[in-house]
Length: 495
Image (cartoon, rainbow, N blue to C red; front, side, top):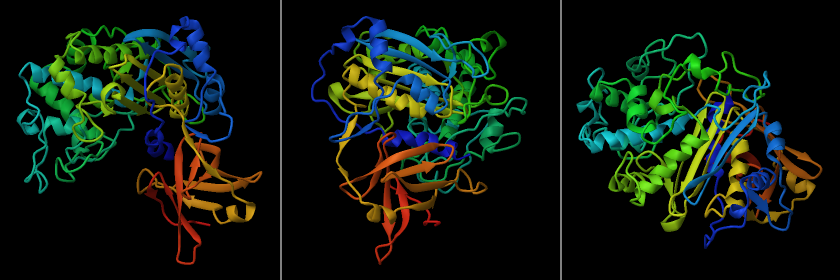
C-alpha cells in the first residue's frame, strides 16, 4: 500500500525555526501533571501562516483524526526523565489502556540501539570500523561486484547508510507466515519477502538508507561473537543501560505479549495476528517503551559529557554523535551544532510509528511511540508542542507567508496527479488537488486526508498541517502538467 512508501517521508518536512538562546522555560517548572496537560492540549502544525491564529489541536482529537488508538510519551528535562504517560488504547478491539510500561515495536529505532552494541564490540577489539565486512562474516558472504572493486563495504559504511546497498526497509511477516533465516533474507531466498541485499553503487559514494545493510551488520555481530542476537543486545546494551522493558524478541515471548500494544492499519483496525514478526532484528526487531528509549538517549548524552561509561567511552560516543555521512552519525541521525546539536531516529513498522530525539548539551528531548500507521501525523505535532513547551532549539513551528489565490487562478492547479508506488507491481496512488470554499485542498487517499494547501511566495503549495511542499511543473505554454512532492518530480498530470 502507498502508506508504506509515504510513511517515512513526513520526516522530510520537519524543518522548523531555530531559537537563539535556550533558557529553562516556565513549563518545565510546572508539576508533571500540569506539564502533561499543557502539552497534550497544544499540538500545533509544523508550519503556521503569518497573520493567522495557530490552529491548536488536542492529542485526543489528533489521534482520532488519524485513527491511532494509542500513544506513549516520555519527556527528558535537565538530563533526567521528567514524565512518562500513556494515552488511548493498546488495541482498538479491547479496553486495556496504554501506560508507560506498554511495549511497542521500535521499528528502525532498533538501528541506532544496535549500533551502540556494535561500537561496544569495536571497543572490545572484536571489530574495526574500516575493515572489509566479509572479514567478519562466517555463515554468509556479501558478493563482490564491479562496485566493491573500487571501495569496500565496511561497518562504518553499513552503520552510516553509505555502503551502496539496496533494500530500504522490511514489511515484516504476518502471523502464521514462515520466517526466513538471516542468510535467506540477505540472499532474497524464500520464504524471504524482500529482494537480495546487494551493492548497487560504489560504497562511500552516497548516503542511501538501507535496512539491508543493518541486517548484514547483525550477521557480522552474531558470527563474530558466537552469541544469539537477543542475548548479545541484552548483555551489551539493554541490561547495562537499565532498559528493563526492552528486548530484541521476534516473535515476542508469550509472557510479554500481554504488555504489548497491537498494531493498527491506516483505518485504525488491528492487523491480522496483532503485529508482524521481524527477523531483521538489528534493523527493526526491538520491542521497548519510550522510557527505555529515554534511558538510552540520556546515557549517550552523559557519556558524551564524560559523566558515564555504562556502555561506551566518551571518545566513542563523540564519534558516534558526529556526522559521518550526512545526516548519519554512527547509528543516529545527527543535526545542528554546539548547544543546538541533537540526535534522533524515527521508526516505521507495520502498524507502528515512533520517534526519539535528544539535545545532549541541554538535556532535553523525548521519545514517542504509537500503534497506528497514521502515527507520524500524531507524533509530529506532539513534537512541536514539546519543542515549544520546553524550548528546544528545533522542531518549533515555522512561519510562512501565504499568497491569496482567486478562484480563476486556483483552477489551473486542480486535478489528479499520480504518486510513486512502492513497487513496479503496484498501481500508483493518486494526489488530488481540489477547491473547497475558495481554498485549495490536497488529498492522498488512505494517507493524507483532505488538507488545506496554501500558496507560498515562491509559487509552491504547502500543506501546513504536515509540512509537505508541492511545486507545479508547467509546459511551454504555461499550463500545469505535473507536480513535485518535497522536491521529487512525480509523473505527469492524469486529468
